[in-house]
Image (cartoon, rainbow, N blue to C red):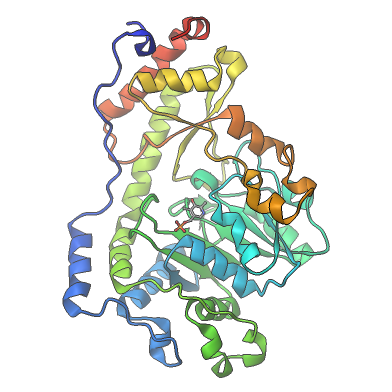
Length: 414
Ligand SMILES: *Cc1c(COP(=O)(O)O)cnc(C)c1O
C-alpha cells in the first residue's frame, strides 16, 4: 500500500465523484407542458376554487396523499414554509414553548419564533440522532404546546412513545421529514407518523423541484388551517370557521405549477432513488464495519432509512487520531467526508440574544448533540444512487488505507 497522499503518496482517487442528479427528460417535459400552457401559477388569494391553486399543484397533492398514505397534503414553496405553516396551524401564542432538536437544519427550530413562541432544545439520542420520548420529557413545562421531531439523515424517530407522550400531555407533534421521504417506521411512511409531517423538495433532498415542500396531516382542521396560512387566509377567514381561524396570519407559501409538475415526476422516481441510497449505504457500511472506531450508524429494527447521509460514529481514542486529522487524510486521498454535520442550533446567537442567561441555550445544554458536532460524527454523501461499484470501492479503499497508516498519521506533521 502506498504512502498516504497527505505525505506525498499516490491518491486513491484522482477524479471527482459523480454528483447526484435527479432531473431527466420526464421533468423537462413536465416543465415544458406548464410553460407552453402559459399559466405558471394558478392561485388566487380570495375565496373560490383557485384559493387552493392550479391543476398541477392539486394533482401533486392527491398523488402525495396516495403515495405516502396521508389524508391531506398541502404543497408549499419550501419545507421551511411548511414548518412555519405547521406552527401557525397549531395556533401557537406568544410565550408558548415548542420542544425542538438542536441537531438539524436551522428551520426545524425557528418556526416558534415567528409566532412569539420559545424553542426549547431537547437532546438527541446517540443511536438515531433524533429526539426521543425520554429527552423530550426532560424539558417539558406547563407552557409546552408542541414538539418538532426531525427524522435526521432519513432515520425516523422512534415515534410511538413520542405520540403516547403527546396524548398524555396534550401536545401537537410535527414531524420534520425533510430528509426522510422514502423511509418507514413500523410499515408507515416517515412524514405520516405525527399530527403533521413536513417534506422538503429542495435541490439537495432525495427528490426535488429546486425549492418546494409538502405538509401532510390526517386532521381536517389542521389541513384547513395550513391552507389558510399558505395563501393569505385572513382574507377568506369569514367564509371558513371564522371564530376558530381568526388568529390566522396568511403568508405567500404557494408552490408554482412548474415546481408541482416537476415534483409529480420526481415522486414517481422516489422508490427507485430510495433503493439506490439504501443499497449503496449498506454496501459501504458492510465493508467499513471492519474498521474499529469507525462505526456505521445503526437503524432501529422497526425502521427503513433512506440514508440521506451515510453516517459513522468516530472514536478518536480507538483510532488514535483526532477527527480533523482523519478527515484531512481522507480528503488528501480524494475522498471527502464531512465532520460533525451542524453545530447545535442553540450555539447560534439568535437564542441567547433573545433569552440572555437562559441555561437552555448555554454550552453543555445538549451533550450528545455537542459531542457529535465536536468529535464523534463523520458523514458522507458518497452513497447516492449514481455512485458506481468502482466509486464505492474507492471510498472503502481510502478509509482502509488511512486506517492502516493511522499510527504514522498520528505522529507525523504534514
Ligand atoms: C432541508 C431541510 C429543511 C428545510 O428545507 P427547505 O425546503 O430548504 O426549506 C428542514 N429540515 C430539515 C431537517 C432539512 O434537512
